[in-house]
Length: 280
Image (cartoon, rainbow, N blue to C red; front, side, top):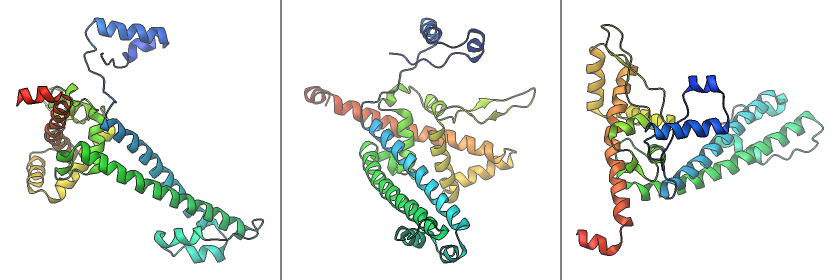
């Protein structure tokens, strides 16, 4: 089985888009040996991590939306209600709003109380859902990639994003350069004339790229080698964004080794017992 990328945009504009045209383009790419990638498997723990991350991300988005709506209702509520809630921190405001008894909803005060109570209870339910998903996600990531989580600067969120990008078969990424390209951390040549430089890669998995960026920011805070590298390359004339791009490439190389160890471990566990004993 091979993975085929989307057709060339210029060819699609000329020929249009339809299912037969896409199938023909995919077949031509395979026959021309342009499609050589192995598709990402989805039959193991990493797929479970992906699904939990998806549910957690949507719950966090909905919780943020509920919090913003609570702020909006308080800002436009009658003065007698707004004065009570405006000065309260979020940790106190949510429980108080959830205990409101609206009374007469035909009045602005009653309607505001009912709206705040509904939004606050929704926020609490989403918060409990996020806590449950985060706990299960942390357990799965720690089970699937204990060595990856143990790397300094890598937590559950970063490890989950990188594992999701690699899939249940990270051996499909033959080199660390292919993993860097998958994460959007590979350098793109942007030289012109005598000016030799590389620019940021806008492609790849953006969540994995964000995970690498998080690791780099953490290490710029406490790691002396990373800070020294930043100072040295900045003195050479590199911009901060260019130096961070280089650092993301180095981090991708380091974390790729840990992900490959996970792949070797999975393959060893999948072998029959007698084969493992013979190999020993």
